[in-house]
Amino acid sequence: MPRPRRDGTPARARNKRKLTELYVRKVQERGLIWDTEQKGLALSVQASGARSWKCIYSYYGRVRWYHLGNAQAIGLSDARRLANRVMFQVAEGKDPQADRKAARNAGTFAELATRYVNEYARQKNAKS
Image 1 (spheres, rainbow, N blue to C red):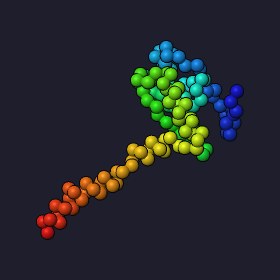
Image 2: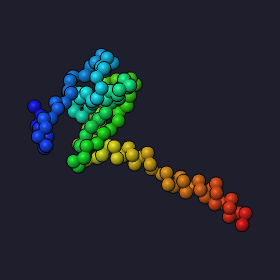
Image 3: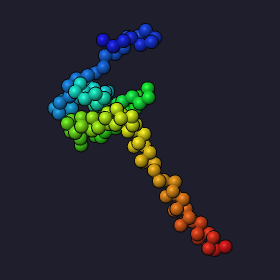
Image 4: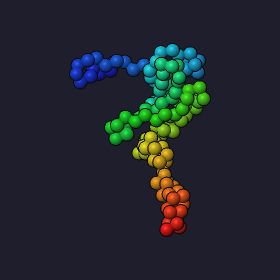
């Protein structure tokens, strides 16, 4: 039984169950459905019916959400394997979500500066 919240209201029980391929395809209820076999793995079901895999972990006391992918494209066993890798990285002291964000933004300023020099600055300086 979960502990009550600080303001005294009772906490809702987590929606946990052993996920199966059939359940993932047929589920209708919206929200997060946690897997009992893999810690941190959850199936997110949107109001539109779209399903996606999330790996939720804590890094230095902050809850982090790592999007694994679309549930139609990634099977349950693959999602468990991916979530296991993410949780292993967290156990090693890494933050996979921050690494993903840094990789997405890496080199953008250098590329922008090079493009500016090649496309604009050289042409303007050559005319002067």
